Structures are given as C-alpha cells and as structure tokens.
Length: 252
Image (tube, rainbow, N blue to C red; front, side):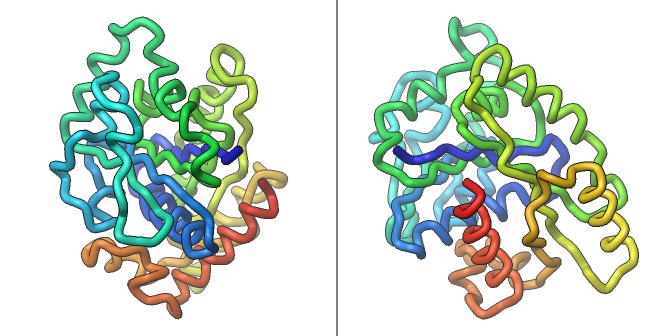
C-alpha cells in the first residue's frame, strides 16, 4: 500500500508547492505511480503542472462529497503522475468544513479507495493551520516540513508541531514526521549557514541531509508549467530534488 505525505508549514513562501511538485515528479520519473493533491485555493501546484485554475471537478468537490477521486484526478502531462487540482472555490471549504459532521476525515475517506493505486500521494497544504491543512494531516501517514533558511526559519514551527501532536492524539495516531527540509539556501551567505546550524541543533534527528539551494531554474520552472527536473534536469535545483527523493525513500 502506498504512503500519503502532507507537505505543510503555516509560514508562506518556504517551498511547499515547489517541493510537492518536484517530489511527485521525481517519484514518477523513478517509474512509480504518484498523485499530487492540491489543497491550496491559490492552486499553485495545479498551475505548476501546466493545468488551468478552473479545472472542474477539483479538490473542493472531492472534499464536499460531490465527486470521487476517480472523477477528480487527471493526467498531469507527466507519465505516471496524476493531479487532483485546486480551484479558488476551495477557499470556501475553510468556512464550510467546520459545519459538516466528521469534517476532519473528509479527505482521508476520499483517498481510502485508491491508496493502493499510488506509491506516493503528496498533499500540498495551504500556508495556514486551518481546516484544509487539518484534513491533510488527518489523511496523511507522514509529514514533511519545508523550512526556508532565513532569519525567521523557526517561527511558527512550534505551532505546527503542536497541531501535529493534537492531530496524532485525536484523529491520526499513525502520523509521523518524515523530516524538516531546508529550502532556498544560499550556502555562500553566513545567514544560511547559521540558520541551517540552528535548525539542525534544535531538531538533530529530523532534518534531512539534503538541502534545496536557491536556484533560478527552480524559480522559473512554474512559469513553464513544468517541474524543475523536466525544465532543466541538469540544474543544481533538479539535482537537489532527485537527492531528496532518494533520501526520503530511504527514510520512509
């Protein structure tokens, strides 16, 4: 049976979507079936794979029960990679979900029938700890936390870890943290070196060895609707994501 990974951090701009898109593409490139579920109403993962923001049905219909995953999942244009797209309508779920009975388990229930179909299912969470992220954490087996190597790197991590513990205690005892992934690192700067050292000091067992560099190819790839590993497979950014995928597969 495949594993479900939530990629979450309530701090925005830390590389969640970039990690979700490129990790799912790496899994597909390795010859395995992968599914990317875009849980963010901004639909950046959807657009980053070349799909429009007005795909219907999408994750909103999936969570509301108006559609099944078989209805929602569609080809990404990359062999073996399917995507469940988001639309701006998904923002309404933040208001509607708390009113529904069993709202926390909606995504888990929707994914259950196809868990064996995909080796990796990746949930790209919005930059908040609202109902959509809670649904993702309840559905997931593992949590990946991208952490930008900037001054406020540790800001908000305590809140995310508190939410993780709450979800694990109340809804999902199987949820574990795969690790913290350092992103957007400029190894030439003292700041990036200091932040990496601080994060590794605070979470010595959790931080992945792989560090994702600040790389122009990573930044420009979404404008072409492609992961960086397809946009420029020989770039430093693509190489880092391939290494991260291998490390994650080893770590589980």
